Image (cartoon, rainbow, N blue to C red; front, top):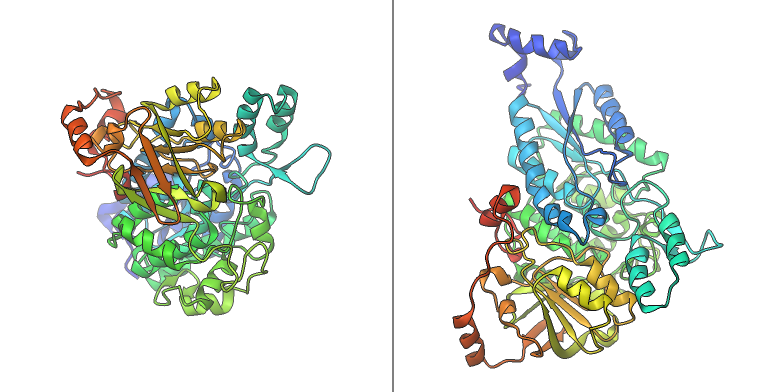
Amino acid sequence: MQLRSDAVRCGIPRAPHRSLLKADGLTDEELKRPLVAVFNSRNDIIPGHNNLDKICEAVKAGIYMAGGVPFEISTIGVCDGIAMNHDGMHYSLVSREAIADSFECAVQGHAFDAAVCIPNCDKIVPGMLLGALRVNIPTVFVSGGPMLPGHQPGCSQGVTTDLNTLFDGAGQVAAGTMTEEELKYFEDTACPTCGSCSGMFTANSMNCLCEALGIALPGNGTIPAVYSERLRLAKHAGMKVMELLEKGICIKDIITEAAIHNAMECDMAFGGSTNTVLHLTAIAQEAGHPIIMDDWDAASARTPHLVKLQPSGPRPLIDLYAVGGVPVVMHELGEAGLLDRSALTVMGTMDEYLANCTKPADGEVCRTHDNPFSKVGALRVLHGNVAPNGGIVKKSAVDPSMLTHTGPARCFDSEEQACEAIFAGKINPGDVVVIRYEGPAGGPGMREMLTPTSAIVGMGLSKSVALLTDGRFSGASKGPCVGHISPEAAAGGPIALVEEGDLISIDIPNCSIRLEVPEEELQRRKAAWVCPEPKVKTGYLARYAKMVTSADKGAILDF
């Protein structure tokens, strides 16, 4: 079999290359084997990643057992929770592109034959996916797994806690409904193990979507980080990539138009983070099968909502694991005729996957396709004169009383301004908080707004106050929060023209968001609008701001 690594292993002219590989400890026998990159995002600061050394060793063992030679390659990562609500969040989304670039450089620079990717949190998953699609070699993903949930004081069962408990708790302390001592208890217990945060937040959403895309083994998204089953999964991932290499199956053979379709269906069914819209749109573009907001709209309209995990409901992700994980969701979508069966997965054809890897839903954690929580998907795309190119809301995490809302705009030109007003008690029931100049270019980096959304919840305003922004939300955000408003304010989008007190109408069931201002007045404001000076003028963020596209296009870089 002709291998990419022949370029560094074979022939007299490659004696220097072999000498360098022997400096790594390789033998002549090993130099006859395929060279496999193991991309590990392990680090000491992200709790979802500090167990990845064990995952990596298991992956390497699997590769070696199956006849390959593994090489660990490190990538960066940013913890969105730690980066939240300070300058660090500017670097979260932009890290996706840096990870993709580093993946491309490492694979092409060393002529690897195949790759196993070990991400876990937030932007690392899509970053590795984008890089893998660029180089198009046999690739398997295996994450580090979700953490176990915390629990209320005095019990080990019942209502669980997670990182969101802390963000909401800060608002509750400000409102006087929680003591600092109670907050300290949750601080010590809500994140009890390593792993990605325990709800269906962005990290777990993306790891589950790796299964739906067909590039990860069943269980990738839901097996807890601390279970030995996770290590066995990692060994099998290492073996599986060697099988794909033998068959000549590359990642673009798997991430096809059919796979993108199936991932969108799954996303709507299990209620993924709003960030999945951003990332899957970017992934589809890199794969050569672009999607637009209308495609997301159509997916939401036809797909039943089958799973309600935190923050949409009370259950942690481990409950989905207990009933069979992502495969039960895939089974129900298959029964409903919503999957494209032409898709290929690491487990074989879609028909083979459905026959061998799935089982019916339990009816409670995962509803059956004919008895869903909702006949439409968990995510909705809203359009209107304030968001001509769309905005995203997690409908499943909105109280029914707030599915429609009209209120006066309270305008803030940064997350910091909005948080100061919310914590100071200056936001009133009925208000619509508008946070702008936080988009991909304007932020720059499209910061997540978990702190303001959680503060609204914690202060008891989630059933009376809405929020819209050209920034993003954490997967943990809940309430009537509309993000990804496009075009963004820094591009002169209509969100830049909103003035204090303007009425804004949000109608989630009808996918509408409207600024109740006459068109003539908006045109007058547009003519008078002046683009603010860039917030950052040097370094990586400045370069990113000059090249990044809008949220509706996946915030990809346009060269």
